[in-house]
Image (spheres, rainbow, N blue to C red):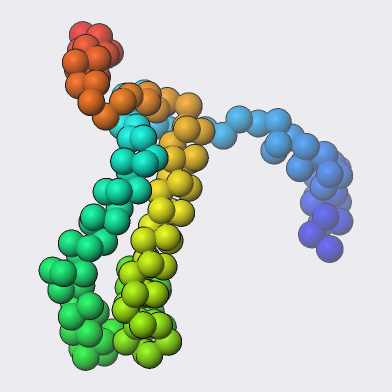
Length: 146
């Protein structure tokens, strides 16, 4: 129905509209920005994720989620479905033991980090640097903003 409506109102077939949209480049309203992506080797990143997960759990993340649930913030809320919260909710609901919760939390955080890296690599105006290359980053910023 929508295709016919478009054709009768514009005289152009729906398929032609779709082709035009595919050929059009998306408007990048951030093209003038100086974007920096600090690359971290995957093995180091994965160790940092594991260390951060341990730190979150030892500093009371499970208790934080328990507190939120006691205030009425149930696991069905979108905010309680994010990485970490959904894992602890599975633990608190008795679906997972502590070790499984921790293992899956680390795994899902790694997967999320991998998706972020893919997304960053596809961004046109984002400059990638090694995380330890501070001098080059500073020089490039100074050259970009004279």
